[in-house]
Amino acid sequence: MKALIRAEIFKLFRQGKTYYALGALFMIEAVVMISAYFEGNNIIEILLDNLRKSFYFEGTLVNGSLLVYLLLNTLWFHLPLILMIVVSGTLTSEYKDRTLQTVMLQPVVKWKYILSKYIVAILFTLVVVFFLALSSFALSYGIFGKGDLIVYLNTLNFFESSEAIYRLRWSFASGALSMVFFSVSSLTIAVIFKEATKTWIIVAFFLVLSNILLKIDFGSNWYNHFFYAKMNDTWQYFFYNTIPWNLVLHNSLLLSIYTLVTMGLGLYIFHKKDIG
Amino acid sequence: MRRLLWILAFTFSQTLSAQVVDADLLKIKQRMDSIKQFSADLTLNVDISFINMPTKKAKMSYTKGKPVKFSSSDFVMIPKRGLDFSLAGIFEYPFITIDRGEEKRNGKTYKAINVIPTDKKADFSIATLLLDTQNRRIAESEINTKKDGSYILEMVYENAKKILPSKVAVSFEIDRIKIPLNFMGKDTDIDRKQMRAAGTKTGKIYLQMNNYTISMN
Image: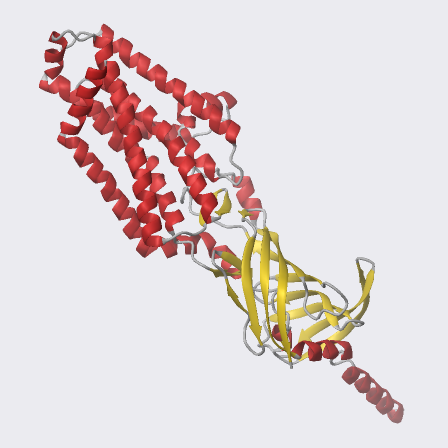
């Protein structure tokens, strides 16, 4: 099993699209930083426009905390999309190049083979989120300095610098769970559809649909508390005035179960399906 | 008859001129004018339904004839009204005062007066002041501005001798923030009823001043 995992890691870092994807991710980071440098004050002006009538403002809110928060928001769409393309590509490229058939001619257990892909996908996702967080903190605070964070979640919430860092760190950790779910889902989709283009269309559709379903409120308690899409914004709960830890734990646990079920489904289908 | 009318008119005009500016207010103004400059550490607590902000600290400094200055190492929201302890804003343009009798606050009786500016350039239409005539200072003021709604300032003093308040509660009207949908952050709940009902809210900010350094004339 260890040998399989090592081989998968080797393959992942040998394929060119991994680096294109990581490059794209850091390009997004650079674009967010540059736009924040030029547009940051306008964003804050819009947020605080109504308050300007009654208050003078001392200090700036365009700082490292706001920048990390803006970069964190790539967890909505940009980051999961990139991860899903890379992760699903690890299997679809094997179908396309027929290397999968070559591997299966070796004494390799099918479910162990695909499980190693899932494990590497999870590790890769965690590493990417970790480096995104690390670079976000280093660049944002390095260039823009520390300061209070302002977030609008139905109310305007202000967090002092140290509190902002604490919440941003937890948010990245929670977001990593959500990213793992999308990565695992994309690999399961790749198991089902095999062909790269089809898989990428389906993963993009799945991501868009998940985001739409997250925003829809059918007024059902069951839907809001147990449906998978509703678990994927848990990382935003850290920016409520009081962190709803019970809800965070509930959602994280449930999302982990959904991730395992999706992985189990992929393992089952791959094990049952013919390679071809 | 004509003589009687002249006497009445003369008496009435004398009464009016006597009411033009309240003597107690002038005494308070004179006392406030004696402050050449002051500085203090400021602690701010915001109480607005749609804003969650931790306690903030800042430094304030005032020099006679100049606006109050603030400095802080982090982001603070300073109310536009409520920190004008010198009452310069009220006394900037000519005004008249009307005696409104007495009013009680927390078991204490204060003299209530209305301040009405006679110059159109003044940024307020009327101010109601509660004067602590015994200690020559303002206890409460309600200022109706022409552009920024009305403000109520409630002052608390450390002791009878103090000229500047140790605590001020500023109540004001504030429009609920209108943010473009899905602008930053989590999906924003859209409650149309709530949005329609939102309108203007009342906010309050509590200021606490410590470590005063006052230099008098």
